[in-house]
Length: 292
Image (cartoon, rainbow, N blue to C red; front, top):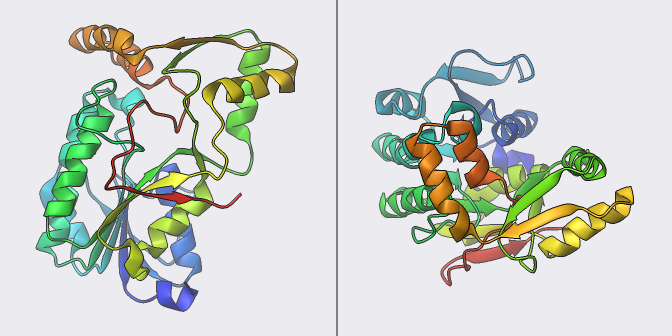
């Protein structure tokens, strides 16, 4: 698609201050699009000052989302619960109910298309970490809302700096012990941030992506064991990795939630290699293998 195509219409980007949302905002501005960005308070210094209309809103406030979506043609929803910071209870309030609110606001305002970032292998049947059933339920609501949609389920999101891998290699070299939930032979799946932003921006322009769910990642998907072996070879030290069955962890996470020990609950629920999952891929979901 060309920048001329992208520049047609007005966009609302939610989660605009996050890593993915801010990248989407910058790319839309560079393409000459009309952009409205949803923020909690004020725009951060690292986002464009011109070419963007910043509006305050909250995923837990339906009326604020309706106001933000007024006069908008396309919604790109990149919001996440940030449960490590705000508490794992925010998953239900933001990942599910907040996404429901955004879909309802989009419908109320006659939005032409909504692109929503979900989570890879979202499933109502997989209770290992509550974000997966919460996202699956929010996907169902969007697909049944009547709003034309595209749902994107990315693998682990990485950038071209290699910062994540450098950080993990450093921790391996320091002898840190890693608990990885799932089997050693499960594949790991990653996607570059720039590619994910492009999918978000172009979804409404490509009729093949209308009203569909896509799992994004690749093209190479090493197993978890291969990934950790590679990190070990880079730093010259065997990684201290323990692969655990997710079912062993669920009771521990639930106990931490009951005690409102959110840091521990998030660690028990989320400390896994990004992009990998234990859930099977539903037959109704398409897979896009990204470029190398």
